[in-house]
Length: 345
Image (cartoon, rainbow, N blue to C red):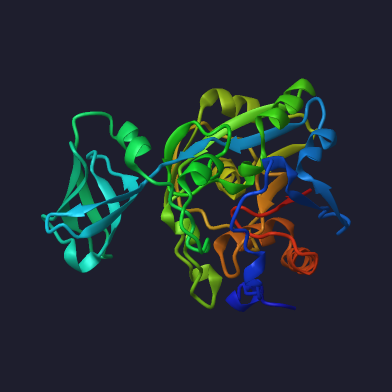
């Protein structure tokens, strides 16, 4: 019997040319690999055909977090260039951040982004991150929208194109700013597709999980059970929880993305009842985990050795996911954030 707790089982060769560098146009023309867990059968659809697949009483659960334009380019007091990448807002109102060049941006350093908009590094954390305080009289969120850049994932080996990425590395239903990465399974939905689903009386529910930098961190321990998952905050309203708990038994409910999946599982009781509220979670879902709530999962194709790949392997089965990924590579599917999608039934 194979040991699915070994990291080696989640490593695979991903051809560089299959890592999508640009999004499909329109969004909903991506390919969708449908994988049936019960039979092991697989077939391909165009993403917008999802509207034909769902009907009255079926439902979708989205993560409506919004990616912050959290990459700021400015000048040091010496005149040299500086980059501040905001990771999360702290309870004090200050921000945890990554900085470049690290050696020249110590405690007390100032960075100016625009006239009237600057920050000061007020602390250096043990892991090298900085705590920054903004000198700005207005709304920081508005300043970020004006002066910030969308942070692209490190595997996109190109410079950001503001006019493209500010729109496309964001879901059309994004509502609450706070993420450093997009919930990528949702990038395929268009306003038109959502309208078609609404016309078919497909229920839509939304939760908010702010995605942190840890989503890009690979698992490095040989026994994946020793991996320390990052903390992320999320919220499920009481109204949404009540709706989720009333789902019909004989209807499909599709969880859109691994972030929605983690939130639902973290907020679920052993019997599969969702409790609304605000949470922090470091739930790590890998083979051996018993799902309490999620029935069907819509997701993109993930990086080798990532916790996201382990989550989908737990949901479907490692063997079935390996087969699906081999098929996707052979048939030239596009991988990662701007790539194609998989629907696991």
